[in-house]
Length: 285
Image (cartoon, rainbow, N blue to C red; front, top):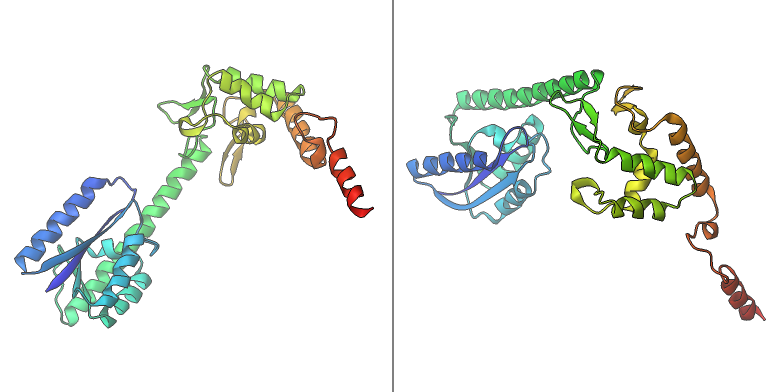
């Protein structure tokens, strides 16, 4: 019997080692049962709660070619953690003459096997839903305590061992000066160039950009406001600037955003708006 292997791991405390272990047990299962592995499909750091997995979809499409008769997985939850997706895609596979086999869960082909398989799939979906609830509950508790919940970290802060925000005294002065310069009339380009000259980097070590400045001017964390989802807690984070400076910068930013485009140029030229007008007039004479 020709078979293919499908392995998957999510980002929940699993690594490439998880893939290696799954494939090792799947191959051993195939050897014991005289099966020939013709291809392997792997999805990395993707949850089985969704069917939006590239290699999984490739597997389903390839089943139409009828080059294999079974898909071997380490456990059924590798195939799917959603009962409806599982039933839907197994139906497609069956139509193409392909069945799903678990290398570690002995499931018979009789009526008992049908019951056991449905129970295993139900438990996989239950486990996934329960884990999601625990993660959400944990993040809510963190938010209520103004703790870091992952994601991008605003420049000017670091996270201590207790997951609280602390001011990074190496970069916070640059943020303060950037706000002051913009509030006092500096352009976005000028405010961008100054942190670059000071050696400040953006997210993931990328060069500091105009987008960083724009996001900085809107980020209320700098006045000490903690935000995560629906949780907004004033004073939940150490403030880098005072609210008066933040409001001055925000008011100027909002005013510049409303200005007509031709007034937004960083440099003013003698023929700005005039050259276009003269050309237009010549065209209608």
